[in-house]
Image (cartoon, rainbow over all chains, first blue to last red):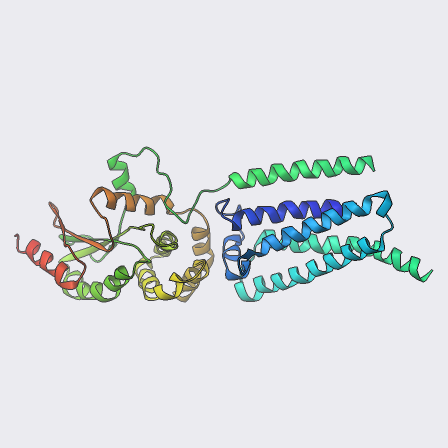
Amino acid sequence: MAVALLSLAGVFLAFYLVAHNLGWTPPLLCGTGDCGIVQSSSHAWVGPIPVSAIGLAGYLALFVLSLMGLQESMARSRLIALLLFGGALAGVLYSGYLTYLEAAVIKAWCRYCVASAILITVVFAATIPEVRRIRGMGSG
Amino acid sequence: MKNFYVVLGVVAVAGVAVVWWALQGGTPVMEPVDLGEITDQELVDLAQGVVYGNEDAPITIMEFADYQCNHCAIFALSVKPLLDTDYIETGQAKLVFHDFPTGLFPHSFLAARAARCAGEQDQYFEYHDEVFRTQMDWGAMESAVGHFRDLADGLGLDGRAFRRCLNGNKYADVVTANRSLGERIGVTGTPSIFVHDGQMLNFTGGYNYADVQRVLEAVGSGN
């Protein structure tokens, strides 16, 4: 349940950045951060795709998977638990890389990116108990 | 389980509301903004150019330029230094730079704002020169924000203040007004150079040193 709620929050967060990257919204509401610098750097894009769109796709996938895992028929699905764990782990690793870019290459911080990095880390942490449960079932 | 879906619904509604609110914020900074109903006098007051040289010099060289136009770079880097030596340093004339982002290039408006932001720290023309000098570099970039920030750092500007200025909407209205002023006095291309002797505005017809010198000499001799 926590994964679903947190992933949904991530969907909105990433959507806001996608909207900005695609020019649907003017300057980010950034306050004291350097969101504009980060979001307009070359690192904010992977070819023609905004990094935020990758995040949006990831959060959407985690959200859908977590909802599926809440259905009675799939509540004990090993596959869904592993997909959630793996997807969140990939998100954490990619967010770590992006955080490194902010710190060492772009030298500017975007509060939305930092928030997303924290969010995906919490999502990842929330997937661990289920994986442990499955491992327990397997070994027992 | 029912409670969970209630919470999920609340999060969804809250998320939509927050994103909708966030998408309303701000105004464009990469292109001219709407100045609304503005009188000629208000436009002139807002469209302040940036003065280079002695403010009290009797003759004014008015330049309307686009930071991403290569002819403007030629004027800035090749012609302006000659004018500087022959007319500005001698106190005969001053140059007033007016932004005229033509709309033909993606980064012109931002470059003009960036230069204004540097002007807040009294380095307008140092920054102006660097922007033109590196035009080939940033002109091809997908985003020039990082480059403009680097130029500010290179000149030793307060980077945080510069970024605050650039990331916000500062000078979007001033740059827009400069362009509108140029349009009202007949600027159709860049660079457009005028010579003003306090009474008449004389269009030089070209931006080469000889073009500008001819009008300056004519104005200076009272012809």
